[in-house]
Length: 608
Ligand code: F6R
Image (cartoon, rainbow, N blue to C red):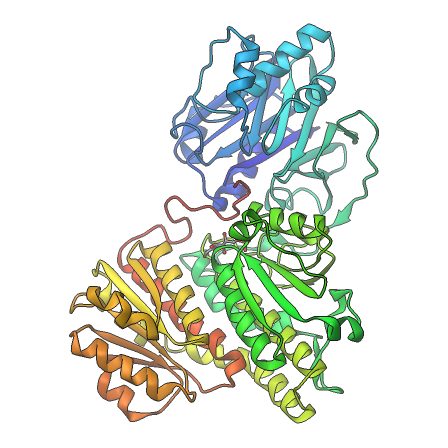
C-alpha cells in the first residue's frame, strides 16, 4: 500500500527520504517519488517501478533540508511516471503526497474549473485546491490545508511542502495513518513506523481530523477548526532498525523459522499456573464481565479472518460460548445488530486495516465493547479498541503473514483457556491446555525440521495450475490459510473446501492434475476424513496428507505424508499451519516468485 515519508531538519533531506522509501518498500508499491524545497523552489523527481529507477534519475547532489517522499500502490490510474507522487500545483510552488482515496474528486475538479491535470490520480486535485485556496485567501499552507479538508470526502494521510515556507511540512490525517517522529533539531513523519525507527524512537500518532505543522524544532497539531489538539508522544519498543532477513534469502523464510520464538514471546507471562488459566492484562474485563459474555463475534480480513475462524472454534469448544468469525467489511456493511452481551474481537497484524478499523468504529458507535488482538503497538486499532491483547510477534515485513498469523492463534488459545476456565473447563484440563501451549514452540521447531521433505513435495507439484486444501471443522480453517498462503506467494490457484462439501460440487474439478492437501488431525472425525481421502484417490488426484495421526490407512491412501508432532487439539492448527507455510514458500521459490512482495498485494491495506 502507499507509503509516506517526510523530513525537515539539519541534515540533507534527499538521502533520508530515499532511505525512508526503501523501508516502506515491503508494503508493496509500483512507483515512487520525492520532492524537496531547494533554494526556495520545489523540485520533484518521480518514476514508475522500483526505487532504484527513481534514484537513477536524481542529480548527484540535492542541497535541501526539507522534503517529502512517496511509494505509490496504484488505485486511480496506471503505475506511470506521471501518476507517481508527489503532485505539484500548476505554478510548482507546492507539492503533496497522499495515501487514501478522494471519493468526491469529480465534484472538486468541477469546482476548480480550468486546470490542466498532469496525472490520472485523484490525489493531484489536492495540490491544485491548496494552491487555489492559498491564492484566494492569501493564507499559509496550513490554513489552506484545514480549509480544503473540509471539502474532501474520502480517506487521507497527506504531507505537503511549499516554497513559501521552506522548512515547514504540513500533515493531515483521516483514515490513513500518519506518524510524527521527533528528533533533535529535526522532525520526520511517515505512514509507517518502520520508516522512522532509524532516526528516532519518540513518536506521535496523528488522529483523524488533525493537521500538523512540522519545523526542525518541533510540531503543532490542530483540529480542522484550528483549535489545538492535545498530543503526547510514545517511545517505540521494537527495534525495527535491527530487523533484517537474518542471513536468509527472504523475510518470509526468516518469519517462518522465527515462529517458535514468536509463540514463546506471545504467551510469555500470560500462563497463570496457579489457577490453570490465562492472564491477559489489557482486557479491561473482570471475571464478572467474562461471565456476562453470551456470544463472541470475531472480525478481521484475509489471514487475520482465518485466524479468527480458528480462534472461534477454539473458544467455542472450550467455553461453549457461541462464537464465530466474519469478514470485517461484510459485517460493517450489513448494518449488524450489536448486542450488549456480545464480545466483539477485532484481529489485525498492522492495526491499520481500513475495513477492520471501520467495523470497530461501527460497533463502538452502536455501544458495543470491542477487544483488539493487534501486533503493531500504538496503531490506530490498538488505540481505539476498548481492551486489547498485543501479539508481541515483533515486526513482520514479508507481505504474506506467517508469524503474525501464528501469534494470532496463540492469543486465541490464551483467550479460549481464559473463557474455558471461567466456565466449564476443570483445573486439571486447564493445566493440560497450558502445557500444550507451552510445548507448542518445540513442536513448531520439529515441523521446521521437516523442511527438506516438505520442499521435495512442493517441488513435485509446483507446476500444477490448481490445488485443493481440504479439512473438516477446525481443520478446515487450517486449510483456508494453507490455500491462502499458496495462492498469494506462488500464484497457483488454490481453494479450500470443507471435506463434507467436496461431493456437493468441487469434486468435479478434482483430477490427476490437481494436488489435494488434506488436513487430518487425530480426532474422532479422522475416520470420516479418511473416507474423503478415498473419494479423492478414486479421481486419481495426488494426495498430500498433513497429519499428527499414525493411522496406517493414511500412509496407504496418500501419495505423500507430512507427519507433524501429535498435540492437543487447541494447538493442532498452529502446528499444522507451519507445515503449510513451508509448502507454500518452497512452491513459490521453485517458481521464482517475488516471495516477499507478491504481485498486486500490499502489507497494510489502509484503503477500502
Ligand atoms: C495474507 C495477509 C493478509 C492480511 C490482511 C489483514 O498473508 O497478510 O490477508 O492478513 O490484509 O491484515 P492485518 O492483519 O494487518 O489487518
